[in-house]
Amino acid sequence: MILTAQDFKISEYDEETLEMDYTLGEEVINLSIYNGDDELEEILKDVNKVVVQLEKYNAEGKDIIVDELYDVYSEKNEGLSEEQFRDELGLLSLYFTGDGEVEFNYEGGAYFGDHILSIEMVDGEFESHVAMNG
Image (cartoon, rainbow, N blue to C red; front, top):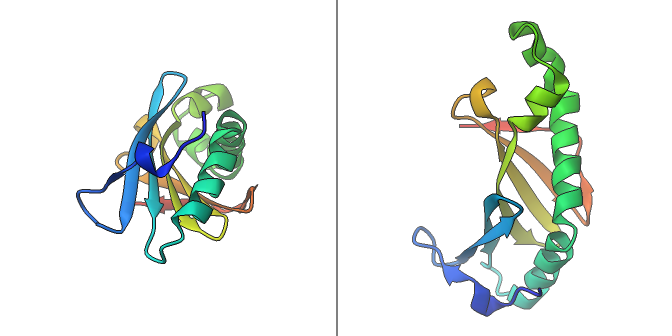
């Protein structure tokens, strides 16, 4: 399924942002496009490149979070397995800004409270750093 501009609606919060809900397995993910530079067609190409491989990218994103944060949280949560930690991670949203850039945002379940974990991807490659927001 190729996503087009008609699949998106203008965000209630920012008229330069378009958004839609996208279903991946049993998860509903918010896809947002920031179109401040009027490059919608180029950004939609990025969206479709990512969406077609979203299962793979989601797994890679979770791997990066586990690699960076599991040891710290397992020390505080005795008996926490790597698999349990990974299972708590849920992909919330993707935020596309153009030039091949997209931000993957995850919720971390009980281990991160209300914090959102973000990973940047540029041209199909993740940065190796996880940012904690909120």
